Image (cartoon, rainbow, N blue to C red; front, side, top):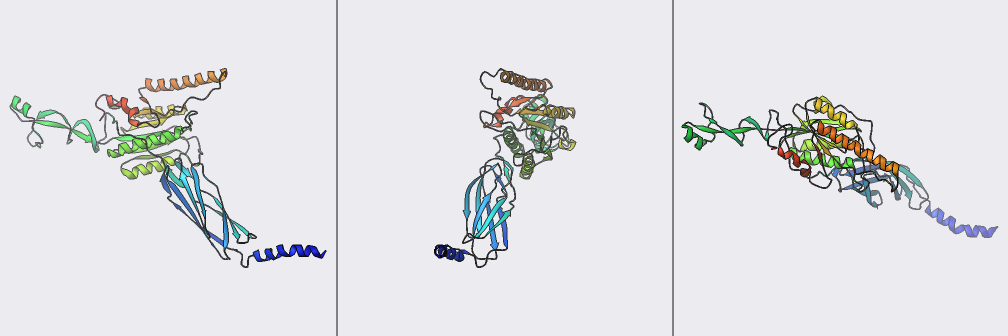
Length: 389
């Protein structure tokens, strides 16, 4: 039937015109991610450059996101695709892969290329903290904390007679006049403290009311206290129990802070946990005389085994409880009400067992300064009586 050929002539001509003269057979891609390390709320930009051996093409990207990122913008150019994300939560997050469909201008030929995008490290915002309690006994290392032992510090701890050969720093004139002999001020030696941040990562409990993650608040509180101690030139280490167990020996300076945060990021990757973790802390992670802060929601009884191990080595732990909220129970659910009462009783028993063994249990409220939680330690040094420093 000849009239059918007349109807098909126009589409066939358009199809012939749309066919590419030189289709893209070789497609190469390159990826840049800026920045690879950032803080919560920062913008992460991924740029995919495309090179091919054919005529002009049209790009159509398909993006797979990690759970801690939000895709804000997709900009498609002639030979590049730009993706802009917002880092919403700390952790190590995947930015890909990106499945890139490469079409010719007529849309008749398609090639699909999978582009692997490197992961990004998102650092947590540190909680506010300035107060740095110190233990009774400090290691023999120069620092900014006054110790009970006499030395070359600046804080006066008493008065004593001058001994020939001793450097006269400052004469105490009232005692000198009264005793008719030279009396000098005695100064406290200045030492630095060793602190270890022990993170309970056996699980991640989400508050049913506020939606806050106990692991998120644990890391933010530990990061804030770490910065406070590093500002006073103390040494800070970290141990994470549960998930991927990591630990770092205490160090000083800004570099130590970022090393600590990098090790903590390995606890959670794309919302997944690996393994049951350790219930025994590696010996090198707890230096002699170290003050150990344990950040935990007290939701897993295995943290008690870790604390017993820390106490058995003669270290001084301080438990900072991260609230996780009570589970929701439907009205009229008698079994649920009974389970909630048992759950509360178990947590109360854990607190009582810790306090009965001499471990301070402090409660930190997310969003508030960590100094409020540590305020009870101002009455004395940890592990004995005296000034908190």
